[in-house]
Length: 92
Image 1: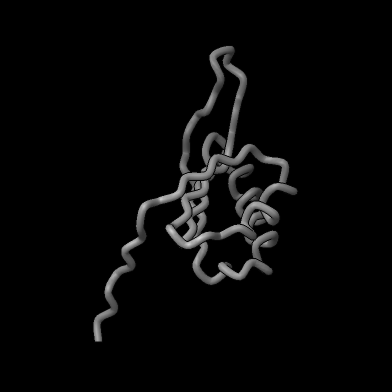
Image 2: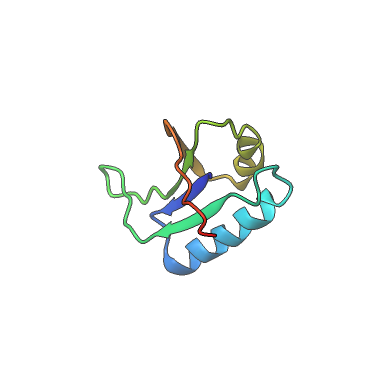
């Protein structure tokens, strides 16, 4: 399950970016599995410049199309690949 975290955005800006991400990823083959998490945080470089970014966690299964859908948004993107994803068990 890909997880896209938004770091360093003002509250309304984060909501706007989240909506752009939702729209951009509609055609993705992984659209039904993607989650978006807003992380309230201040992200600055050493000079005090704001440096918001997207952090994308990917499971062991490739999600190559995410790059082509997210890059046009013009945001910095950090990608981390997880060793494994353990989904919750569904109770019957």
